[in-house]
Length: 469
Image (cartoon, rainbow, N blue to C red; front, side, top):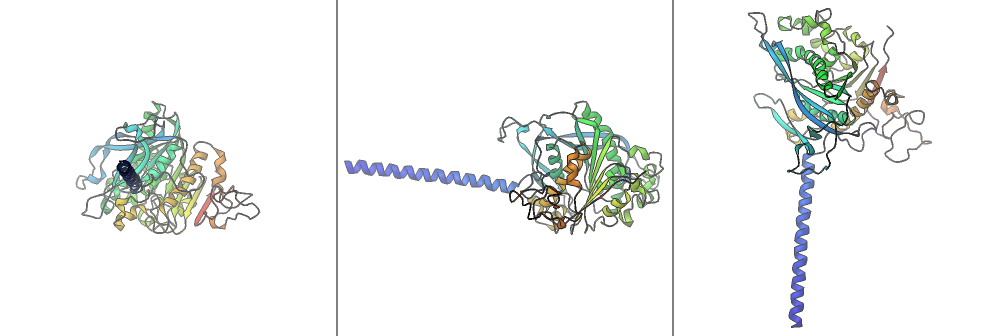
């Protein structure tokens, strides 16, 4: 009897241990599945890694996002220009705007399928053109923003974003979410460009970029002021590639009457907006405080939007960011020349040594990594995208905080002691307190302020003050 009871206890104990092992195994498998799913989804691009410079990390606010639509009545459709009649039909132009803003965090950050939409971080869906005749390539990007979350405050500065040719604004979430977390309202225009490889249709973005940006800058602040979300007297512009052409034009760069954009535009539809044209002033934006342009288009012999003197019309602070191996819009006649020509602006040029054109997007999503065409939308051949975005976020934050919010403490991050980042030194007599410490800047160190030791490499930052009137 004793042996039977003992054997029974042993059997029960063994079963209990087996059940425990099974449960532990199931829990481990579930945790591994969650980890694998998280890895598959990837980190939101607006949240940077441990090597990010000091001002790159997210700010104190949660982020909300919502979509809205603006319509500009009776606009000439240049892509439907009738050569026989010599005119373009008039059609309403509808622009979708993605709006990111500082938001109140939900009571619980736990995201469950039964939770309300505003408590679940967004997953962006976008698309980019594929080589014809294939359909557009679709992708998804993880975000931190909460759809339609309540705003956390009022009277924030407004940053209007213009994407590149045939681009999708959700691929700029590294910037849009990051700035919103730092107290900016960010409005990204969806321009709905034609296919980038269809050369005759390039006249569409050339005409519409500045017109769209100017229209949104006139219309959107009035709408958002009604709910006290933005301060209409603190506006900044950001443009990438073709968007860079648009924001520079709206910032004061004067379109050349003899330039290719005007000469080749069907029906001379751009003529009213060029230098001396009757509608030139309609492209200018009131209360503009600062402009940022990454890999800006507008240079080169085929584009030459403003001629040699047009950039003199820009008088607001300007931050240009480019790779010196940009063969798409050309570095020498593009960003580098723009820096030299914009003599009436306090301006900066941040150059990534060895980088090409594609330094403005999120890291490539998983679905865009199987084909080089798709991959190259997102990725520079030399520079790691996460690193580029973190550096850009650091400098854009310093620049906008200084010139839009008026925070002069940010000047030290822009006025670097040496133009070539690799020439900075951190003397042994003033060692960093921890391995990952940020450089305090001069006089203790000539490593660029906010960069970690051995992590300020391959960059050049030029600054030029505005010329005397």
